[in-house]
Image (cartoon, rainbow, N blue to C red):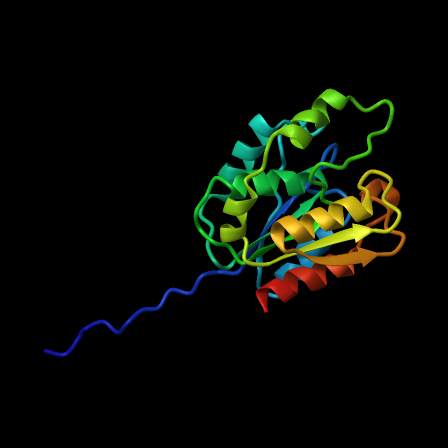
Amino acid sequence: MAELWPNVYVLAMKRAIIVHGWASNPEDGWFPWLKEKLEAQDIHVDIPAMPHPMIPTIADWVPALAKAADQIDHETIFVGHSIGCQTILRYLQTIDTPIQGVVFVAGFIKDLVLDPDEPKEIATPWLETPIQFEKLRAVIPRSIAIFSDNDRFVPLKENSESFSNLLGSTIVVDHGKKHFAGDQGIMELPSVLDAALKLFA
């Protein structure tokens, strides 16, 4: 008897999850621009609003990202900005499913410079709580870390070496983009778009 139903192949949808940083939100800076550009390439984009962004904590941000990410697969990439990069790392070390890759923008590992009026007790857990890089290398096959040559918060040499050595990230250095923040006038970021599309290629 002939098979009544043809074989059905379910194709995974390309998906990007953008994670904003400290004191930011999904409508800030270059996030809406990147969302529009990626959606024009038939990539589904989520930008979750992280809880109490003025007081980011590992205990709240990582579960919030896990809930927003839900089902991820090999067609999923993450794009993080600043402490959003840390959030992505700390979430991905809890899963076993390899993804397509990550774009880190102004990410930091252990080297971060705070303004004098910024509370160090917020940043300290992010800087001192260990990250499981061996586990992460199995989940993140490719990553691109983008830095600015005049970011006063994220030291370029120390952090570019950390991402390269610990995750094997490709390093990209933009000129004069400061901390890539909306309040610094960064409303479009072609290097991030190029990196995201390269991960999907």
